[in-house]
Amino acid sequence: MNTRTLILILVVLFLLLVGSVLGFEARYAQRIYPGVSIWGSDVGGMRPEGAVAELEVPSRLQDPLIRLHGPERSWDVSPYDLGLRIEPTLTLAQAYRVGRERSRSGGVLSHVELLALGRNLPPIITYNETKSRLYLEALTETLNVTPTDAALSFQGVTPVVEPARVGRRLDVDATLAELSPALMRLAPAEVSLVMEAIPPSISDAGPALAEAEHLLDGSLTLTVADPREEDPEPWVISPEQLVEMLTVRPEEGVLHTSLNRDRLRLYLEKLAPALAIDPVDARFHFNEATGQLVPIKESEEGRALDVEASLDRIVDTLRRGDRHVALAVEEIAPRYPDTASAEELGIVERVATGESYFIGSPSGRDHNIRLAATKFDGVVVPPDETFSFNHYLGAVTAEAGYDESYITAGEQLEMGVGGGICQVSTTAFRAAFWGGYPITERWYHGQRVGYYELRGGGVGMDATVYSPHVDLKFVNDRSTPLLIETEVGEATHRLVFRFYATDDGRKVEKEGPVITDEAEPGPPIYELDEELAPGTVVKWQSAVDGLTATIERRVYDSSGDMLYHDTFVSEYEPRRAAYHYGLGYEPPETEPEP
Image (cartoon, rainbow, N blue to C red):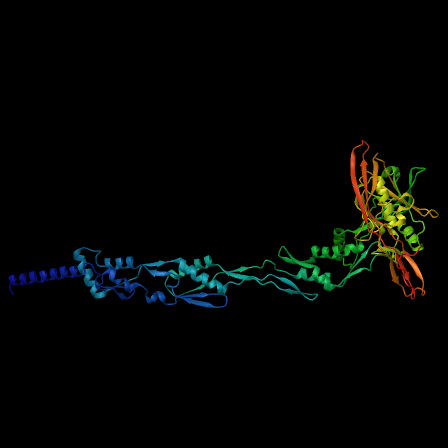
């Protein structure tokens, strides 16, 4: 072969080589060169955008490479689940650049090298820590344990302790700090979950148990330090009652048991009425000769339970181990002690008198009047206080010493306990009337009663009472206390109410009575009484006319200015005569002669 032929062959081969290279470059101008793979996946000859699907979820990221160790169990997790991803655009851009880094001449050699040996590239990996965080936070439902506080409960009167338990919590941030480096190595790894111990808020119930056992170790007895004869028996609070008064409370992480002051206070407040004793004011007579008060009944101090002081005593006594407590009481002084003088009280002169007569009263009525009058003798009414007749009168019963006598009830008089007491209320009314005191409640009788009109008493100057609904009330509107003194004339059958105070110069004028609406009674009543002797008749009551009596009262102060203008209207129904007769008696058509 001559030189020319050889040159021609070489030129042809060169041209073929150049053409092949140009054709190769033209074919793969927008493609990844053959021989390039990513994590073993051949991407040669592919356009970068077309190779994205090959890199979406490679099995290597889905293999459970990471083992997470918890307190009781472990979890095998893939890098993909923990947030590792291949960044396809950058990874394929890297693959596309393989073989294109050198000059053209050098590129041919690299192409040959790629075709002969190939190149396996690692992908560009991104890590989304949020995925790992979310995965770990999902584990907290299994891993986290809420701490349990120590507790004390009661089974009946037996205290029972539930011990404290330490809780735990997955420390997500600390675990991520351990997990992230292991994850990025893309190699099998074991990571221990970082657990944080959570101590309970209340770690110890031992003191509460000891205190509860001490408080419930027997009954608690409550007494009064200086008992009076009328005091009830001591109160015994059983352990079953005490347990309801206990409270369990935490102090600096430790439980304690103590008496609940609010519950014990409620218990003591229920006892208070049984221990309460109202103070008793002294009662006096006024000696008009000396101008001095003479005690006729000593005053007495009252008493009240001091609840707060008793609470303190109970707590302190139980703390010392004693189970008998003397309750604290406070003495209440009377408003008017028996040592008070006339000058101190301002009771220095007589300011009013009321009187009435009960001549001819049956023995029962006479007795009741005298007994009821004693209820008001020596009473002191404070300034601005309303006097209530029924309050001082008290119970009107046979047990209180009252006898049966005639009382007004309907058309005929009846026998009833306490008949005649209205004589006393009538007399008190007259004293209040002439004393110029404001009378806030006064009731007239349904029918006229002859006793109240004896010796100038006059019609319309009576006042009936019937406890508790019908009362006589007036107000002590003077600046000094009012002393009421009563007296019953043994021979004269005269009842007197005397009022003593400081005279403020007021004057009282009475006008009337003005009589209207007079009405005569109807025919007499005859009623059979089989207990009467046959053929006999007894006059039970006399006939009384009906009428309306109107009395006006004007009260002036010391300057002559009017203080009060009262009108007292009494509407009396007529009362028919009544006769009771025995068997065999024929009632007449007209009333018999007396």
